[in-house]
Image 1 (spheres, rainbow, N blue to C red):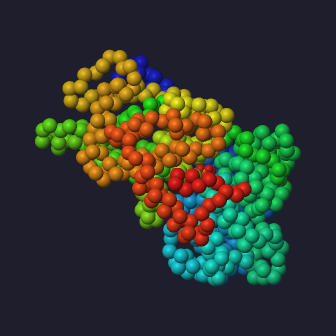
Image 2: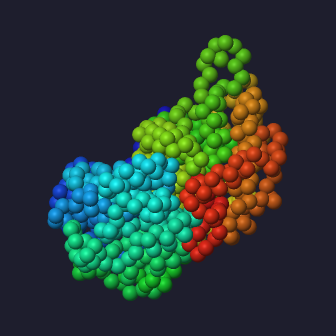
Image 3: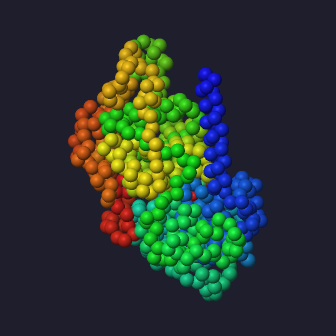
Length: 616
Ligand SMILES: Nc1ncnc2c1ncn2[C@@H]1O[C@H](COP(=O)(O)OP(=O)(O)OP(=O)(O)O)[C@@H](O)[C@H]1O
């Protein structure tokens, strides 16, 4: 390495450290957990056992307000610690109940989350927090688990219950032994996603079944303070019109907490809530707590994207997409072997195909001698995992858990991993298939650069889709271009392929040509792989056609060259669009809906589109 390169690498490192420190300072409040009014044992647990030196701003803002008993709507960037923000105050109150809470009292707090993985994740955090409060019992119920076992757990009693909406509604209706007469807190984590996934009807029913109002003397004859108003909390990094509706249904005179809420201040009275330690302090935190007017429309809000996140896009013609993806991944792991990457796809079939391909694709492709054959290696020398909604529950659980623990791995996923999941040390998010609305972009990239860590995000766009950048810009996301050609030029060409000095188009790049050929060879030498590719092609085109609203004018299915789309699945010709995969998807969706006791979805005020079901 030359002196100059060494110098610039050193400068880059120094800049990274400075940026990292800046990001951390912007994230953490200058107070302690105990100064927020939390029980000393709980503050100790957070600091000593969980290693959280100081609360984040959103925690410093939310904890006193939630402790005070007010309903709250929290809008804060991804990875800023919203889970602790709502769990800690609940535990604080429950551990102080006299007589002590026990299993026979049933459920005091209910956390509703959109996905099974998030359910498990919140449960794990809760278990850690309850380490010193063994009499408070955590538990979860969610789709994909055995109902009988859940019923037995509910019968025994669960103090703080984490649940996905469909399964929760099922138990509320059918599990007589589910005691919730002492229920005091209901939390909607990732509130907008719960609605986007089409759970609006379930949520309305859940709210109705749980009722609202006070825990009067008769109901709380044996435990907890009397006459306490039920408290509802809504949280998300992105809010929209539907959440507004849910807020109106479930929140009573809520306090709005958001790191990025300056815009609301123009319209709404700013008021520090009672009980907040900052209520009379001259701190920036005071500006962040806003007494929200129910009719406020949060849909035009800029979304909070972590400031240290490096956001890029790569412009790739459709036919070269697959090669570009593999090259970008190879380059990432050659640059830094020990890292984790999440790649987002639009459909389950696309995840399955790419997973099989990456798990089997070897390099170099043409081995002429025995020696060459023996030195063949996987193209990407790291473990690959997949995650989507059609997988068996055990496989989902195992992929989620193992990827979390790995140091060097790729996760290929649908949007099922986009919300709330906290995979430690994910360095890069690749959105190979475009997200839908900008909110989806924000949550996907939010799987990296969490809690002040550094992170990169790369969005794949075809030249015809480039206007999507304008849409992102409207929400505060500005992306720089990724130097794809420079990266491609770095790869050694297999065999005796000549290196051309001036490459006219990406598709004529010798590396692209050779890699594309090798990928097609894998597909055509393995019928199973080709079948997966065909299914993925069909579902991808259908997914593309299902973009909503304004995005329809950017993602125009008629503008697609289907032959080039086929190439991006390593197919030499375009398969028929009437594929088996669509039929299977439809059958699976209908089955899922039947299991959830639903009618096939119709839109209502709080329901999202059906498109989301195949995207998870
Ligand atoms: N005060 C803290 N200090 C250090 N780490 C923290 C603190 N609070 C939470 N964390 C950690 O930060 C990570 C992100 O927290 P969490 O998942 O609650 O974020 P979030 O705001 O809910 O993100 P998302 O919007 O993506 O769901 C977790 O690993 C959590 O353990």
